[in-house]
Image 1 (cartoon, rainbow, N blue to C red):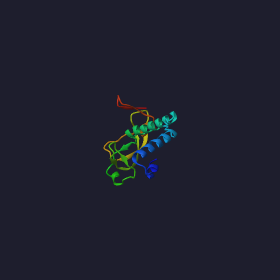
Image 2 (cartoon, one colour; image 1 turned 60 degrees about the vertical axis):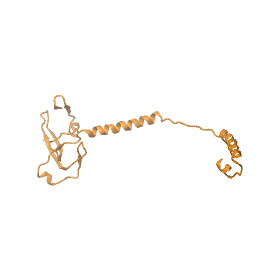
Image 3 (tube, one colour; image 1 turned 90 degrees about the vertical axis):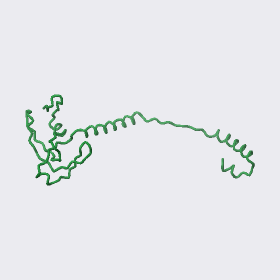
Image 4 (tube, helix red, strand yellow; image 1 turned 120 degrees about the vertical axis):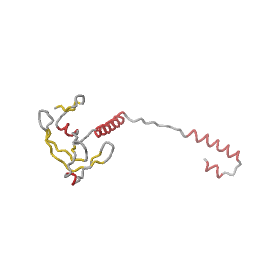
Length: 145
């Protein structure tokens, strides 16, 4: 419409009348339609399942995942490629693995490869507990077989 009016040599009032007439003609031929598409229940369910899986991964990362022991001065001489991270995000150096036999006072002894890491105390991780199907009794502060 503006391109047609711009080439006309008429005065302003005639151009305004022409614009009004053009608008009346063209506005009735076009219909505005707004379509709204709602996601299907299946899409919502898939999205919810993905978010639940991501949250599960984050919860798993909050617990000590692997079992570690502090290094001896001799073990500190060779740094391993494995990098661990503390809860605050700092790197923890590792120095290999050591197979230990643990007697926790239960009905059996446990052989397990511990990661030698820059920690001050040994940590029995979820890997060990899950592998041997052990439970933590936090109220009585003991491991149950």
